[in-house]
Amino acid sequence: MNLLILGGTTEASAIARALAHDTRFNATISLAGRTRHPAPQPLPCRVGGFGGAEGLARYLTEHRIGAVIDATHPFATRMTRNAEDAARLSGTRLLVVWRPPWRRQPSDIWIDVPDMAAAAEALGPAPRRVLLTIGQKDLAAFAAAPWHHYVLRSVDPPAPDALPHRAEVIAARGPFAETAERDLLVTRRIEVLVTKNSGGGATEGKLAAARVLGLPVVMVSRPPPPDAETVATADEALAWIERLYHAQPRRGA
Ligand code: NAP
Image (cartoon, rainbow, N blue to C red; front, top):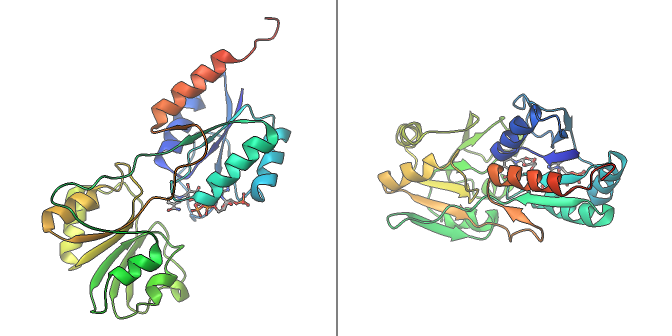
């Protein structure tokens, strides 16, 4: 069975590792091509956009894909919408890995906001030292609040002209342990964190560190869930693939 895994997450890599040596499947992983040195993949890998939902639908038909597993990040909303539309257009089975969001704990000081503009506004009018762990796409909102000092952590350093006026960059790839996160917050004298509610264990350490240090976290809320069948983990996705495989009509049956 031919499978397409839409990747860029720890779940996608875990699914890819599990399928790599399973001869029943002929799986390909797809990456957007955002990071300069993506982690090596155990499956054949294609890189770059498909050209919208129609382009993806064409790819699914031409490559006779039996199922597409959308294991992109929960904030990669355009890709997930395209996957929904392409699955409908091409009649391909679709599963979305929808990682549960982080939940506030009693001693957390979270400021929930709907988007990046609201996150920048929530930092307030007085200058603060801010840890931004939001990737590179949404820096413009913070460039518009140049009185803060930003410490930006992302896999690759952003283009210098995309950075807010006062910004230092830490290029690093997760996972990040709680103790290292606590050191980072203390040594960089961080007063407030800004993050998307990505969920998952790989980048949760900063929330535990902020809790211990009594620091506020500006939390950008999740987009609405996809209009598709979902599972929460890579293991559940693999179980879904297994069920689908056994439900396939066999040649000669
Ligand atoms: P997005 O805004 O939802 O997608 C924008 C466009 O990028 C899509 O329309 C598609 O282009 C292309 N694309 C996205 N994911 C792709 C994939 N896996 N394979 C091929 N093309 C892909 O996505 P994004 O938020 O920029 O995220 C890009 C990638 O980074 C995703 O793979 C995601 O898993 C990963 N990522 C995102 C975040 C985040 O916070 N957004 C965090 C960690 C990792 P076409 O329309 O041309 O097909």
